[in-house]
Amino acid sequence: MRRTVGFSLALCLAAPLLVGADAGPRAKPAAAWPGCCGLAPWATAAPLTVQPHAGGGLFLQGYAYIVGGSPLRHHLGVTGQIPAAYAKLKNPLQPTLENAQAGAAVYEAECASCHGVSGLGDGPASKGVETPPAQLGWLLKIPPKLRDAFMYWSVADGGKKFGTVMPSYKDKLAEEKIWSVIGYIQARLPTSKPATKAPTPPGSSPP
Image 1 (cartoon, rainbow, N blue to C red):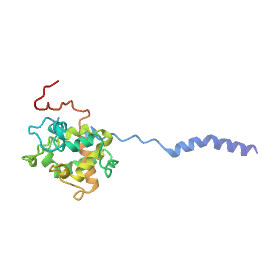
Image 2 (cartoon, one colour):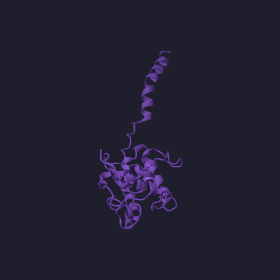
Image 3 (cartoon, rainbow, N blue to C red):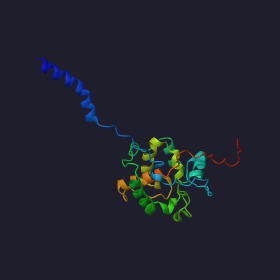
Image 4 (tube, rainbow, N blue to C red):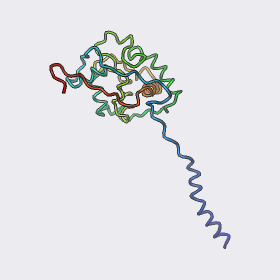
């Protein structure tokens, strides 16, 4: 009888330890892509020298003047108005140097000709287009929780609906390659938002 009681007591005392042992050490959350992998950040974005003619009204024209690309798409991204098909997407790849290097290869082959080697939208294929390619450092304006979805939407669908020359890659690149280049671009984002000011609309005085 005593042996049975003793065994039951020992089992009760050991149970929490066994549960803890089965759970194992808690995995540390993965580091965010921006600042990962020791990559140099994109060049600081600057006002463009040509006023784009994409639609979106005076306010959005000012935004396009700074970042390039589609002012309407950037506005939708900043305000979280991303199509439902993309709105909940998250990058399944871990922020590692290996994944970033894979993304760098995709970027060099598919993106650098327009967005440039420094992300300033000044690649050789950007010359003469009506709406200059987006400057990548300004993706930092997109809230972090929306950034994956916004970028996948932009890369997959392209810019035809928004009047830009950004091609659609959903039928050209595998999903993993799209995610790898998204991770690479994010890995090179600055770690804080650039201080910027939209240009003063013509005919108005600065505050």
